[in-house]
Length: 162
Image (cartoon, rainbow, N blue to C red; front, side):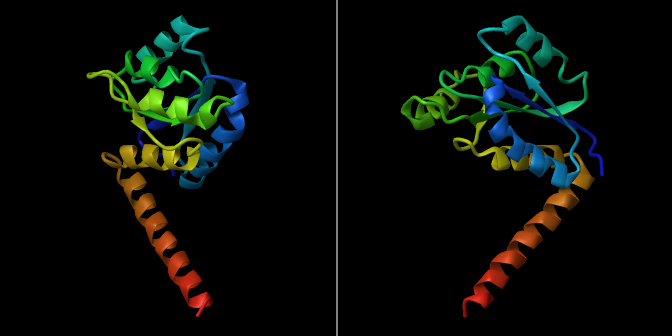
C-alpha cells in the first residue's frame, strides 16, 4: 500500500541506527515508502543542504531528522526545505538527551521543527504518516485502522485483568 509521498529519515550518525530501526518498523507496518540517509549538519553541511533542497523533487512528504548532542540536523534541514521536519532527539552521553531535546525545541521563528520525545522513533514515524494522511486517503485509512486496533488491545487488556 504505497502512499502518495515518501518519508525521508536522516540521522546524524550511524550509531543512531538502533533507534531509527524502530521508526522503520512502524513505517513498514503502514506500507510507507522511506529512505534512510546519514548526514551531519556539521561534518557534511553541503550534502545536508543539497538533500533538503532536493527533497520535494524526490517525492518526500516529510523528513524525520534524528540527532543527538547539539542536535542541529533537524534545524539545518528545515532551513532548506518547505517540507515538515520532525526532530527526533537521540539520547546522548550528555544530560541524558535533554540537550538534544531542548536544542530541537528552541528553533528560531520561521524555521519550525516538530519534535517528539527523546528516542521516540515510533512516534516520529506515526507523526510522519499522519502528516502524509492530510492529503492521502490510503494513509488516513491505515491510521484509522491502527487507532481501532490500539483501542481493541486496551479494552482486551482491561477485560483480561477483571
